[in-house]
Image (cartoon, rainbow, N blue to C red; front, side, top):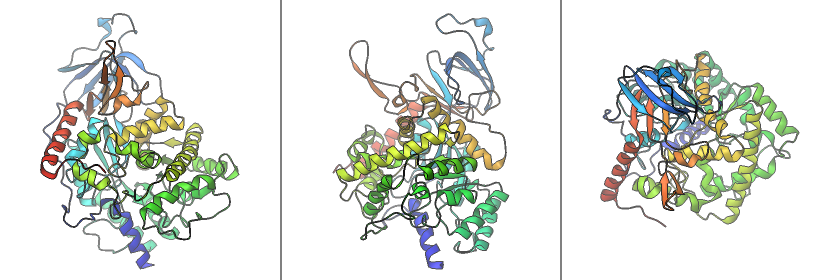
Amino acid sequence: MKRIMQLSFIIAVAVITVFAQDKPKSILPGPDRSEGEGPFNRLVIRGATVIDGSGAPPMGPVDIVIEGNKITAVQSVGYPGVPINEKRRPKPGDNEIDAHGAYVMPGFVDMHAHAGDPQKAPETEYVYKLWLAHGVTTVRGVPIGSMEFSLTEKERSAKNEITAPRIWAYQFPGQGNDWKGGPINSPETARQWVKYAARKGVDGIKLRAFDPEIMEAILDEAKKHNLGSTAHLAQTGVARMNTIDAARLGLGTQTHYYGLFESMYENHDIQPWPVDMNYSDEQHRFGQVARQWSLVNPNGEKWESLKKELLALDMTMDPTMNIYAAGRDVMKARNADWHSIYTLPSQWEYYMPSRRAHGSYWFNWTTADEIAWKKFYQVWMQFLNEYKNAGGRVTTGSDSGFIYKLYGFGYIEELELLQEAGFHPLEVLRAATLHGAETLHKPLGTPVNFGMVKAGYLADLVIVDENPLANFKVLYGTGAVKINENNEVVRVGGVKTTIKDGIVYDAKQLLADVENMVKQAKRRDGDLKKY
């Protein structure tokens, strides 16, 4: 048992493990903040069309008043197509933003975030700026790094000492430099670690598929300390701990798809792997998991029973579909518009096929593999859409840094994928804002204070000149391609302004900073190497 738990822990931290011994051995904290203006005594955003995050339709023109880091008024100032009645407008601020013709939304919540890696993106400034440049003002680190690193960066972000989103720190059981209890291999040890983590100040726990008695102990103790929980129910343990097993024990969020399909197999209890299956071979791991699409019966008895019970247990789904989307079309992911400008050479090297780098499993990716993944997504998306339609909470996460997905850009792709799944664009934006905030606050039992454009809420906002409901592509840093009135091919969009905690960031400048970081790295390390 002890050896099994030690192996499980090694797998659990693989996402932040360095495989190459000649690379830096730690990620660098964000530098002291030199960007952003504010917070202001009184900031007024004038003439915007507001998408408030609740699912309500857009409304405008609206003036938004921000005092310090709080929204204090969202005031309608007229009707579309007619002059604004100046008498209805809030009094001037000491700073103002002209948002006539622009759209304002709540800041986005990325529920599955890692802040770089020594091997691929060692400077967290690079990651933080890509997130903020895409409107991400809150991240749930699962984790963003070690416990000590996560808690320090969380505090610095809360004080706005760094240019970074607000950070919620979820850590793996067993993490902590001064944890003396050893591997988490018994219910007693599990409870002791949760108490330790709560004292340290973590917000929640990131779980794998622990043995049932240990999983029960962790989740029970976490609830006592108002800690959240999310789980990547790894295939190495899912035979004993699938989604419904974990939900019955009190798991708050399932991330990815692991354990979901296994909860409703029709004719199997475990996946019928090929006889030469080797989980350590990532082509086997990721190539075979998609074959689950044929093992379930959409809208069958088990499907409907699972959906009903997960709803009753108030399980949140955080699918992170974007991180596996390359499996459907690796050529598309490899040749995305942003790689040549915003992807570090070290990050690109990590993406390339490798038997040592997690998620770089393109040893011999075939048409048949991509077809399996396309079918898998069809079934997965159907369940997510039905779960949402039945009242279930679905959120947005990215897990970027793997499988050709870049920070910020991967998050916007998640919005597109939810729309593909059947979500109306307003439902997508609710998942990206209010539903993320609700999920984070739920374990605390405290009122939600971000995730909507509403008086009394934190001033976390995104401003874009194009209508995101008409085309989510306008949220990518590279914008969307269209032909203008002069028959010229142009790029439009990209987030214009991100406001976090009342501090106004020029999103275009943040992207320019990232571009410069990439140029410097290319001069030092060489250009991106294609294959």
